[in-house]
Length: 365
Image (cartoon, rainbow, N blue to C red; front, top):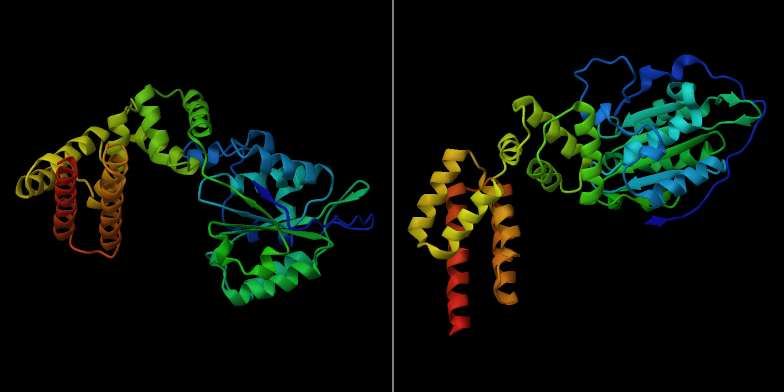
């Protein structure tokens, strides 16, 4: 949903002149747009990036709002935030194409703030670009656009400096900040932008976009393979396309097993088997069998824990036992993220299920 903080009219100026070529592609960093004629090795993430606002797969409420503001010549500074692969960069690049057409690369400065994150970048590159006059198209003067991807990686000093630059050059420049964590953007910057939250894509939109790519590339993808792609993407379109392309490079037919094998994730049938051992076998037997499967199939324990956690939601058990079990597995996953010993954490996982089994037996009696 949208959260509109403020709107700023674009100032018209019939006397604006063409700026020089110093603001051209040489300053562009971050995510680039694929143009016709690029080699076939182009990643599908870029090859199938939406070229217009109408092509953006989801978030139609946000896209339509931005489209209307653009058409009415009332584009504000923008702050687009949300998880990766949800269409933030694609949306703002589509806006740029609509605004500038063939002059696109002269009118936009792209910076990846995770690389260009310091105050010097704000004082030099950004301020130099913002301070120059913008192109004039007919009777309307078009503002330039500065795109700051991964803006949450900027230092606090750089963000405070950017606040003043935004105020000073509002007349001829608009800023689009893109980030995953909006809480890392200082309030002073947030208040100067219209904020839009991009939620993870639902399975319908991911499926439809994947079908479009599958048809365009003439791939052999059974329904089970497509379902596996959607499931593993977790609402991240970029991740879904990367998995699809990687699996295609490894296998002619993109089956469910090929997808899981390519990503290194445990198959659903493996998780069912592991869960059966955890719920029915002794500690020693469970440890032996899970260790053997983990080694034979090259599975990571952290992936097993995540998948088993999801499987627990499908099992019928009292809510208090389920909550305790899920909390235990969350603790195990956290310890694994700190590089704790796998064998110890596997033992902890089996012990958690042993306690849960004892609680289930006690509850039944």
